[in-house]
Length: 76
Image 1 (cartoon, rainbow, N blue to C red):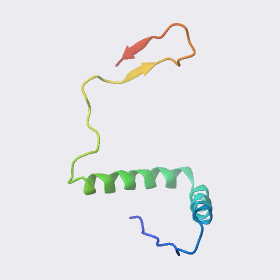
Image 2 (cartoon, rainbow, N blue to C red; image 1 turned 30 degrees about the vertical axis):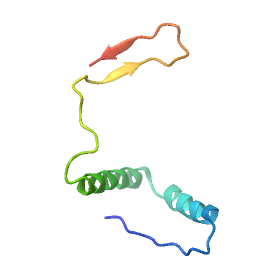
Image 3 (cartoon, helix red, strand yellow; image 1 turned 30 degrees about the horizontal axis):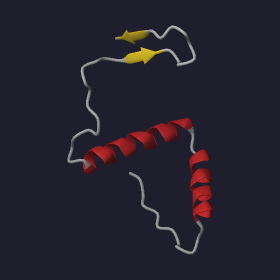
């Protein structure tokens, strides 16, 4: 589970952002992935047990970048 860190109000925003960036960059890819899953679990819990987004029944929509002349859309 994550933890809540309270920062000293005398610190500048940039100092806090630098500290958070250093902590994030020190994590391995696996730790970042599990932190994302924990964040998702917390978001669902705070939303009354309902996910923030639900499938719309359209499947996976993939499109080429806007730089291409032919815009192809695929639905899986």
